[in-house]
Length: 193
Image (cartoon, rainbow, N blue to C red; front, side, top):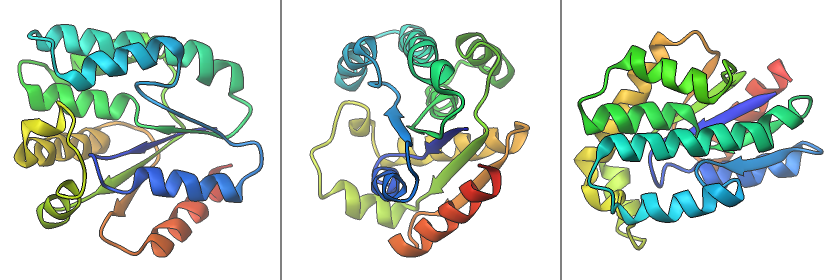
């Protein structure tokens, strides 16, 4: 079962992934970008925010997604795979960058993922107050330096996109307690796995 943990920076995905690893045996955890050797290199380029072309940025994300699918997801489709980010983030960031159309982005991602979308998407929804507080506690990368309004826009695009896709999902209030969020995720994953 292939599960995406999606959401903007500091929403709590990583904390919940660590907790999930303690509950399920033989869970495979990965991330996009950075889950493969190529992904590590792509991540460095993307986090520097050094590309002047948003199309080049999108294509680098898609190349990483295709490699990640071929190396991690496809060979392990009989196991529980938890990915910190995936195609929904890709669509959300691309739409926030402008000049992209939703259906076109879906088709590009289908191509990268060999027509295989996740079995479940867990989307963490934050708010401006929480985002300000948590961002103030960390060193910001190139994408985070685009600003809080940009990140909230990405989140809105992810939520709107998720509503249009026919993929099971769970919306999580990222301001809820770690334990409450954990229990909601465990319940939903167990229903499907």
